[in-house]
Amino acid sequence: METTGTTPQHTRMAEALSAGDRSVRLRAALALGSNPDPALLDTLVERCAAEPDFFVRDMLAWALIRLPAKTALPRIRRELGAERPQARSQALHLLSKFGDADTWPWITRDLLHDANDQVARTAWRVAAALAPEDGEERRRLAGELVRQLGRGGRDVRLSLSRALVELGEAAAPLLAEAAESPDPEAAAHARATERLRQDPDSGFDAALAEAERVVLLGPERAASAAAAAASVDAGAPEAAGPAAGADTADPAEVDPAGAAPAPEAREC
Image 1 (cartoon, rainbow, N blue to C red):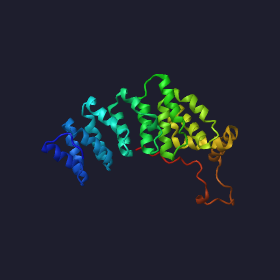
Image 2 (image 1 turned 90 degrees about the vertical axis):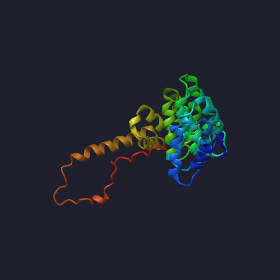
Image 3 (image 1 turned 135 degrees about the vertical axis):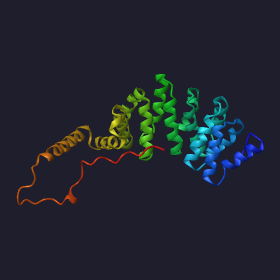
Image 4 (image 1 turned 180 degrees about the vertical axis):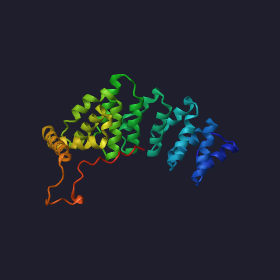
């Protein structure tokens, strides 16, 4: 491991950050954050790229943002082109922690389209957070994100939707266009994202399920099906109970169509 400092204290801290015991690494990162030392900048950045434990990585990030931005950011920028995906992802995460708007251009198109899902998800989140208020720049970013609608599994799509929602009106016309895509996955994802943009409380899973029905059935048939289901649900409580002698269904056979969807998982 490269260390900028050469004192025995620096050597001991570098060794502690790479110790086999997680608690030792955590305490070392805490100590460096409590007493920031630019001489260990390289060591901290390298450990962020390799550290397997989430909590230790979080403490390493805290230690890094305790250093002067003008010293830390140029070194972090070098990691954006690193071969190791975790190095790229952590460097992007650190840009969001520093919150310096001048670093927004560092989030390149290659990072936004990174083949590694975790890197791409982090790039989407950070780019949307740091994007300037200038409408043209936000529309350009939205255009890059919309091209990836339908990518990956549920968590990847949720991350992309959140980034597009963050861009607000800049994303609206592009989402409307994508909703008519011949690709049903992209079209449903676009519709779900626009619903979230208009109604953040609707929930991603419910928005996506509704969007998939619209894409599959078409708007009119989907609306008719939803109205029919609502009518059935509204009429159910009015029943006074089964007539004497009538057959009753086993409760285990009743389809819980009105059950609420499972809560969404938080993005890592």
